[in-house]
Length: 348
Ligand code: GLA
Image (cartoon, rainbow, N blue to C red; front, side):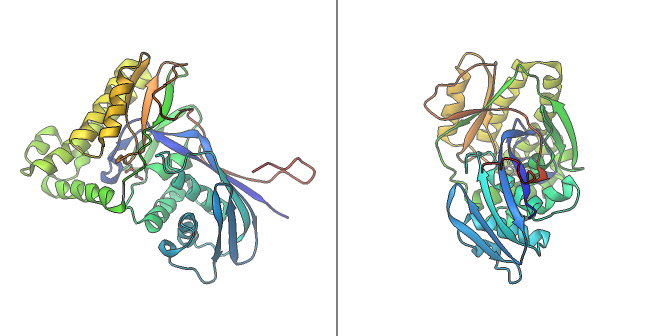
């Protein structure tokens, strides 16, 4: 009996938000929380149970359903991955995760990447990320960028990843041990529906029709945009790309306060120019800014609720009445055969 064990981590983005869809710069890191799919491959039907979900998923790969119609809802991600990677062999398996679901740590990207590997995906890390990005779009209807899936697939232990979403080059940047990364749950569950994210993406694209690619645009180009709303959107993207470069310099120089200042600036830009924040997230960042030992904080991920990321001195605990998780930069996805017979089985 062959059993494969595929694992894929969640991610947190240090800086570079709402830039990936216009070929911009992002600086995420894979985290030490992951999703594991343990599968015994065989047959044309895929049966998965999940420790965290009451209902199992059953997919007939010989007669695939439209992924967005699959029930239970978590099965949509599985079905979309199976469709995109053209899976022909199913099997029986189990999923478990310690990534908080729906909190902004890319639990869905981790599920997609782990399922793709378990289903035998063969290709480069970038091809894996692209396939899973396509699956996310199919399953959720959200026209997401590539950041989440690429961070999960390509993570490097102890490093953040500078990803150029135009060339898709990935450059690992060490995260020093004396910089603590904390994900702070706002408690506000995403009001992100498919439209809020899609509307932002189309606004960025409309701005690009006025001034050309935002990735190459200057502040003077942006100032030429007549429509004030589109000008704000473009200003967010161009300034955020600059902040990512500055953040990499600060990380390399060990300038934690400078780096933290860039996170606060990023939040202001996400609030005022991209307009993807909420009063709850703004209050949380404000509260974080007053905690001793916090270098910087901002909303993380798509926004409209979810989490903030804070950079702090080591050992700082954030007692703000919401849940928070210290995360470590970790390795990306992997696949292995299960332990041989006689070896204590992994508990899932
Ligand atoms: C979501 C998307 C990403 C990215 C972020 C915002 O997480 O999946 O592609 O656009 O929002 O930076």
